[in-house]
Image (cartoon, rainbow, N blue to C red; front, side, top):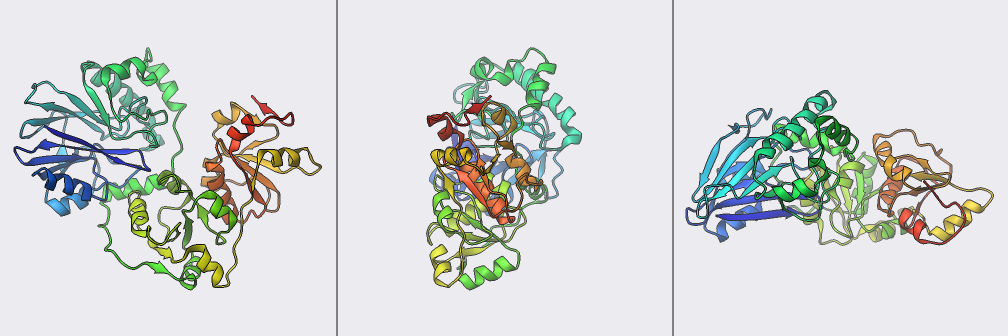
Length: 464
C-alpha cells in the first residue's frame, strides 16, 4: 500500500494519497485546489488517480476535487447527504473501495458537518484489518471538529452527532488504529490541535480532553464554550464547495503600476499588504490592510480581514512572489486578484503619492503614556477568555471578531488608542483594519501582552 500525507502550510490542512503502485491506481482524499502535487506523485510512482474523495463540504479551504477531475478524469465521491450542485458519486456508510492491495471503507461520521465521513484503510499485504482511519474534520490530534459551521439552526443536532460519532462509532474501533486527520495546528476547524500530524486512537482516548467526558451533557458544555474565530471567508468557501469552484486562471503578467493601483483603490478594490508588520508600519498605502506573511502564509487571517468577494491588489515583499501568493489566496477562494504593485511601496512613493504609518509602542513607552495626564485608550482584541486571564488595567475588550463584524469601536475617530493582543500579530492586523475604516490615531503595543508581562514595572500591572 502506498500512503502519503500532504501538508498545506498556512491553513493547517492535510490531504492524503492512498493507492497501490503495483496495480497502478491511487485515490486522493481532501485535495487542495492546486493539484500539481498529486499529479507528480502519480507520475513518480507509476499510478493514475482513479478516485477523489472529499470527507465533507469544507469551510476553510476550497476543494481541489473539480480541478483534479479535470486533470485526470477520476470520479469525485462525497457523502450522499452533501448538497453539492456539481456531478459527484454519492457515498454511503459501509461503501468499500479497493486500490490494488489497499482498501478504503467509508464511515458516516456526522458532527463537524452533517455530511462528514471518515475512511478506514487496510493494507492487505499485512492484514485485512484496518491499519488507520482518515478522520477528516471529526477527530484531530488533541482536539475534535467544531460543530457550529453549518449554522446555528443545526447546532444542537450537530453537537449530538459529533458526540455519537466520537464516542460510539469511533468508540467501537481498536486502540491500535493510526489517526490521520485532515487538519493540524493552525486550522480554525478546531482550537487545541497538536503540532503532531497523526496519532493513534488509543492515545487520543488517553490524552485528548474532548474524548474524556463522562456523558453528553458535559461534552456539550465543553464543545460549545470553545469555538474559535469564524473568518468571514468561511461562508463563501462553503458556497464555492457546494456549487463547484471555478478553474484556475492562466498565468498572466499582472504587474500593476502605481497609477493602476491607485485607480483600483479608488474603484473599491482592497489593497492587501503582505509585508512584515514593521515594514508596513513604516510606510503603507492609505486604506491598505496588513497581514504579515513574513513567517509564512497566514491565510485564515486574510479570511478574517478581507471580504471574500473583494477585488484585490497585492503589496508584496518582492516582485518575484506573485504567482505563489495568488496560489495561496485561491486556496481560500480569493479569486479576484487583479495583480501586484510592481516595485512595491517604493514605486508608490516615487510616483509622488502619499503614504501613512502605523506607530508601534514599546512597553516602556506605553507605561510612560499611561502614567501621563492624557493616557490613550487601550483596545484589547483578544478573546474574552484570554482577556479575563490577564489584562492591562483600563483596557477595553473589543475583540478581533467584533472588529471583523464591523461593530462600533469604543474609541472615537479622533481618540488616541493603542491596540493590544497576546503577541502583537492580531493587533497589527486589527489596527490596519481600523485605520482603513478611518480611525486615524491608532498604534500597536509591540510584543503585546507577552512583552508586557516580561517587562518589569509597577504601573498598571496585569489584572486577573
